[in-house]
Image 1 (tube, helix red, strand yellow):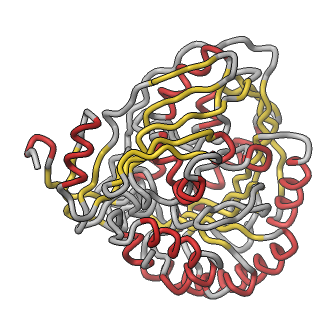
Image 2 (image 1 turned 60 degrees about the vertical axis):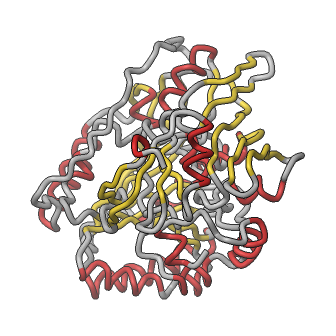
Image 3 (image 1 turned 30 degrees about the horizontal axis):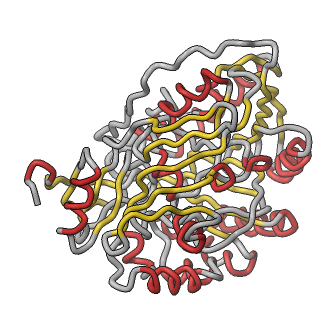
Length: 441
């Protein structure tokens, strides 16, 4: 392998709970991508490395970074189709499409995530109750596989591999380019309506109610103590159609630099949540917001993650049916009372879709928790894990680095279908990451 395209470096998962010394390559031409792939026993693909769990590296695989494949290849304004390379970041994609008042609405929460990473994760955005996951915007994919070569994937061509690739966490090969079907966007400005809620049950009901009439809805809730558990705000963001501002965004840079000493603890979390809620209740119930604030809520707020320090954090994102939600939350609160976990983030939103293979999607409520990474919280989370089968909960592979093979197999009922189809396609199991090895995918 040409040493110019081979470097050793230590790489962390975004949540910083897992790290490995890896071989890292950055081809800038398709021929080099082929050469690196042919000379590597095991491969995995890496973009911006912003998946919370270690999907894009392994100590036993060469991580092929696709960030130099970042061109816009084709655009048809009439048909609303665009073909881009997989290393293009979301903000670069939007900077082009918004000129024509077009976009894909299934945008995950940070602007420098790559298109390829979003497809491998089958990402979703704030409007997932209406727009579902990114799968709904994909027309076709160009894939390179070490054994199968260049493959065009779509509903009409290599459909089975097309299905395996979307949400397939990079295990079917290297996503090189993708064609999206774009949607019209009415405005790049939003009006945000804030609705105060006092309990998690009230919040759930508001989320479900508002989702019927609007699009971009999610909540922020307190979980720093049992007394205030679930108290918070439902944010209903809708487009300000009076605005015609479609100017370019600045190029977004990652500002994730964890502090040496963690700053999140039960006292700082409680104080921050109290002030945040108080300020929100004192301000106007409606306000105008720009595109980046609504679509990328953590951009320029990276210190939230930096405050976890070098040990990082643990995120748990769960899908649960509304009929089981109240009972699950009652058990959650009972365990909360016993174990007193340290939770920095608690949020709800509604989702639509059909769960299939490894995809994190369904017609269910999406719950997100962020925890300080310590042994007490890991014990609490293991107790919550034991409730998944009882309440038919689907945990996100993308977000939770702790997931065990047992929990994965019980939660993803048709994971065996994915594994069999993948092994039929790739008998040598060439594309592997830390997560795929642990879960034996």
